[in-house]
Length: 191
Image (cartoon, rainbow, N blue to C red; front, side, top):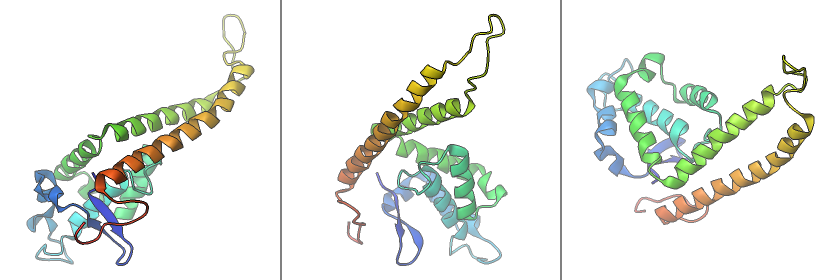
């Protein structure tokens, strides 16, 4: 289910489904007392909640521009772009909301599969970055990694990329059908 969308006309993240605010973890982020600051003494503007929702969207949502980033890079970019301070990020209420959003996002088996595939690709990338064909077995002096095996694995990367892209397209197509929207159409006020 899609909870947020980026309104390019005003340059802000907006709630797609207000029903998310029925979930206590998100409702609590909006409390006025929690959102009081030097720039908003009453908490009415809910600036902190906006920063928190921005981080949650950028880090967890499948439509985030950072969705394909490795987890550490995705976190760093999301933290910077949301403007959250370290103390705000480490707030237990916020972390609870993050876990809940991740749980909601992963309730779709297709997204779970896509994320698992992406983690596996990250492992493959790490492997390829650290293979040393000059490394030898200490006992018999034979190569640990055979060049022909490495070449075969590199050739197989094309299939991995194509497969991952196809899986991502299928997941997005399925999620678009769940919202009833097609193509790049954004939901309107009554959608």
